[in-house]
Length: 130
Image (cartoon, rainbow, N blue to C red):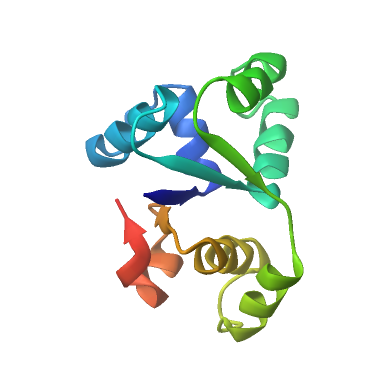
């Protein structure tokens, strides 16, 4: 199964934050140990996570974080592609740009989204896992 993560979910996972649901933690653990799941990282999510870490909003070493994403499991970086742009244009503009890109990536990759985000959950409950 393919899953797309948002920034909060990704950072909560790497920092073992209690805000992460046990269901999502299990999915991410399996992907980290290369079992069953592929975690798709929209480029915007990775950039936001780096920004949060650089600003010290979350205590975690950036080098450690990037190494974990590159070498630590079944993570696939999803750059913005023409297919994602096409999906993006179909998504309601009520969502913010970052959320639209996350949803567009999930639709393009035929994936579910690991997120607690209320707006994404409201408009796309059929593909949200929490």
